[in-house]
Image 1 (cartoon, one colour):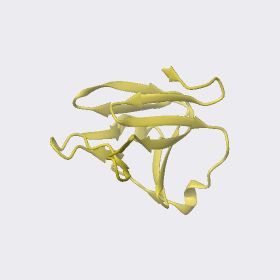
Image 2 (tube, helix red, strand yellow):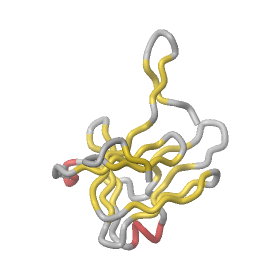
Image 3 (cartoon, rainbow, N blue to C red):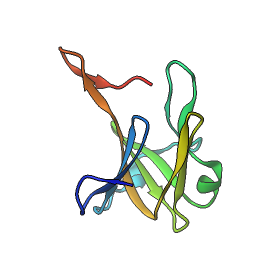
Image 4 (cartoon, rainbow, N blue to C red):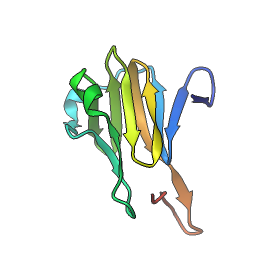
Length: 112
């Protein structure tokens, strides 16, 4: 685990960050992403995704407006990718953040 500060721990897998949040987010207002895909690589087609076993155990990935959230069940949630090692997130709610880069004119998502 990498940690920005004690109150907001975060985990990273490639260009995706999972920031644990304390505030409640009403995920029922969002769209459940039942396939668990967080992001697909533009070059390889590989995907950062919530493992099927985590989804079956109650983990939930939700798009809410332009944001994405993950709620890990009591069993936690495993995030997998073909080119990165899996990461295990403890129980809780996470903001899913895509790394950004500045290209000299504007900010954009880092392309995988």
